[in-house]
Amino acid sequence: MAKLQNVTLSLPEDLVREARHLAVDKGVSLSRYLTCVLEEQVQRRHQYEQARDRMLRLMDEGLPYTMPDPITWTRNDLHER
Image 1 (cartoon, helix red, strand yellow):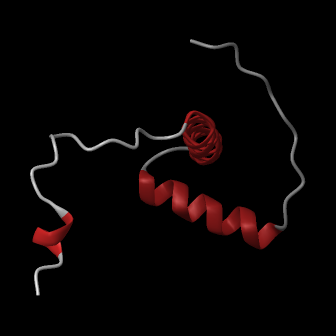
Image 2 (cartoon, one colour):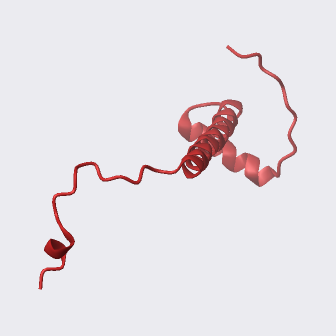
Image 3 (cartoon, one colour):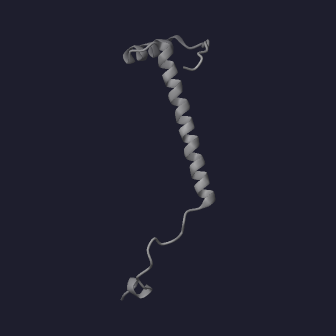
């Protein structure tokens, strides 16, 4: 398990009250609830960055511009009148 670090936060009373209710609904302590919320946000950020990096790499490399099978049709077949 990772080393835990205590952090002091200053939060509005009504926000703390609502967060405590949410934590109770989940059956966890306020500390654990806030930890889960922060972990979720950090994970989303990492997933976004990974997806962005994949897309940028694909844009740099480009996609293959070839037909998977040999072309068996002619222009006249497509534009038959």
